[in-house]
Image 1 (tube, rainbow, N blue to C red):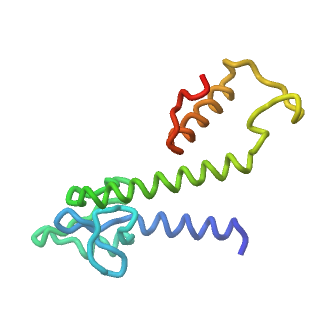
Image 2 (image 1 turned 180 degrees about the horizontal axis):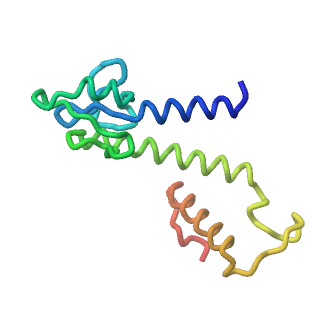
Length: 146
């Protein structure tokens, strides 16, 4: 399949399975396999599927995926924290990979054929800020080397 076809299928799935079912403050998991307080782990339903499960008397409601909080009101704090840490670790790993891929090209100098923009240039600010965030994520101080 081409990436255009995959993109269209993904868009269709995302748009049409854009509902979550909530019972007593927790999201239904996929395939009716229990409950979760973490939106990323919740089952996705079409509007019709979600509305068919809705029953206010039983404490079952529905919410659009875009309106649902990342962690439901009844999510255990330790699970929310562990999930947040996992997502942060994934972001840091992605940044590390980007830094490896960019390599020396992220540090303009005559040796790699690039000219250094002025220090107040927006790209220099962005590069400094990205390096500070990565350094902090690695456990260093963001003002090292100053």
